[in-house]
Image (tube, rainbow, N blue to C red):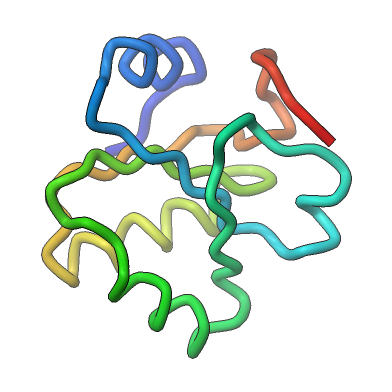
Length: 102
């Protein structure tokens, strides 16, 4: 499900069963990242799929990338693997106005 920044942030803040996924590359993550995000580089498909198998399907996943395209793709993959609750951040970290760490 695609959510605006405000919707994504509000839903995340009210969710006690959440995990943030950052599907960008190492280089992008080094610039800045949303706190407590787990990186899973979608541009490395074998590793991405391996890490996906280790995720807890009962959690709610809040997924972002640079602009929202790769995270939308990641949500589609998660759903195809049985993960029911996956929320894509529209605009990605480029438009994120919340807290970041570097």
